Amino acid sequence: MNSNVKRFLVGFSLLILVWSCSFTTDKNPEYLFKASMLVKENHTWYKAFIHFGKLIEERSGGRMELEVYPSEQLAKELEAIRLIRSEVIDMTISAGSLTNFAEILIFSDMPFLLKDTIAMHKLINSDIGKRIEKEMIKKIGVRPLGYFQRGERHLTSNRPIKHPDDLQELIIRVPNVPSYVVAWKALGAKPTPMAFSEVFSSLQQGTIEAQENPFAMIKNAGFSEVQKYLNLTGHLITWGYPIVGEKQFQKLPDDLKAIFLQAAKEMQIYEHKLFLNNESKVQKQLQEEGMIFVEVDKNIFMENGEKAIYESLSPQMQEIYKTIKKITQ
Image (cartoon, rainbow, N blue to C red; front, side, top):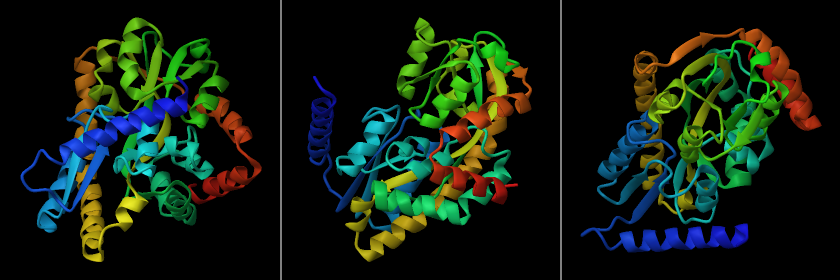
């Protein structure tokens, strides 16, 4: 069965699900949004979307509702984006995976690009950040509703990794984002793109040997059960965009659009508070669960990976890369 047929069958099945669900409530809203999440219910993203759903339902008098499906129940991340574009579902959170649809999104999820969260905020609020948002709407057909800070990404493994030399031939799961593959290959590892929902079982079975994610995602997915070392590589400072299909958003009348966008602003503030409260807690919890934190020489990792990423970019993206480096210093 080829990929187009598979995609049609998945989309058709979800369309039937959406249709059947419309008969399960006594009072149907005028606008029902369905959100696909890769995280579990205890993650800050899921909680933020639930909060957002309550806001739009209350403020619209029940005219708008949101159903949130965790753990990739509806679709894996890339498929969720495709389903949003085809109006089968409506919302998700994404960033680097959007590179598959618009090249400039590579800068929202690029290893060794940003040195800290101050640099991240500078990029998001710069002209380049605004251009990224515009291209999401025009080229991909999804509207960003703000951004969620994700924290530094770190590498987990079953052997300590202190230096790039320790990475040789290590099979690392990465998201389906080109810059991740380039970076880890340059460092000597074997990066393997894989859906997030498949990572735990693949680590358990030994299909892959390592993975990389922020503290909250490592905790949320239970990786401490199958990984011993948490290597503090801090190789990536990134964020995720809560997104809605542009076609779906434009179907709303102006009064509901205003409610929707205001609720999105409040969702970002709400999620950031949860994120800050959660960040220090999960580090302690991971250590209590037996993970050993390993200090690494971040500068050596950056030196080995940065050049390879730059050289992998198109000439146009290389110019943007240089500009980002200037504005984020």
